[in-house]
Amino acid sequence: MEAFSDALLDLCGPSLGWITEQFEVFYSVLPDGAIRHDAATGLAWIGDMELRADLVGTYAEDATFQWAWAKQGLAGSPAIAGSLRLREIGERNSVPELTHAIVDLGHFTDPRLAAQHLGLVAAALLGARGELHYSHGGRALTFLATDDPGLPIAGPDPARVARALQTGAEMLPGARAAEMVNEYAAHHRLEARSVAAGLELDLPDDHQVLARIDGGRLTAVTVTGPDGPVAPAPGHRPPIADDPAALFLPAGLFAALARSVASALDRGSVALGDHLAELGWEPGVPPVWDAGVARYGDLLDAQAREIGVYLPGPGTWEWSDDDWDGVTRLRSVVREHGTEYLGAERVVLPESEVQAR
Image (cartoon, rainbow, N blue to C red; front, side, top):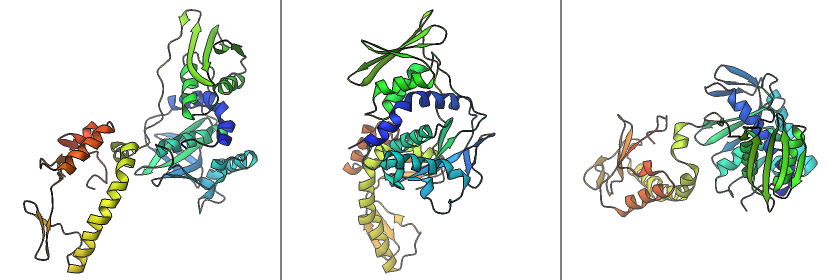
């Protein structure tokens, strides 16, 4: 089933509204720049800002999340204190996601997004003022939580509360909306009142929030003030965490193609490479292409079809105009996943050290 455990939902679900608000305030003060972290000192840097930060865990390309407390070589590091606290919280509340060293997220449609939600939830359980994640290679991610005292603490903002509650409700399907709204009110020392449509709460300066709840789910949030409805303020997104190559192939498409690619490599490239090695062909030397035949010197002529052409100068890929069903089907698949740019006649590849692969 694509869901976290009930134990995790019960533990963290109520806090998702106010922690989403807190993290948006955190993102609003971050400068532009790459994220770096030193596990030996427990310090992180984004651009020219230095923060005290804990290493929460990491996500690997095999769709698993590993907690920092389980990583060899980090015992005693100040940077894993928060991770150890999470394990203690998990043990007290019997939460499997917090007590297993490695959490398998492969049953989620988008395991990487599930890892991002788990990292955010972990920071929420720590009462952190901010959460960061960044790529440490390909699709792998590192997750940090910071309680640096120099960071701001969010208050109940009429222009921010609707987005915070709605985002929190969407983050973990199964979390109970009424508990989240009540917890939001309690966190800010406000009173939530039950009404026919859901829950109401009063914000400072005569602003009022109506959280509409139907069947346990949050369906809408409206905020009004002395001058009428309050429009949401522009949101603040977390820093870009990915290498351009990781963004280039979205997780859904990557998952759809991975099994076929692995099978093709096993039956094709690997088997061909082993055969050529037995024949004495020098590894790394490309064949000569000759109209449907890949010629490996005098050792082997392999019948082949042209898929496309990589042009390293402009950094582009051009699909073959060969009338071959394989290319047609592949270009159709990428369009189905909303990546029409990959099905174009000429594909501009992202600048990356893996571009040529």
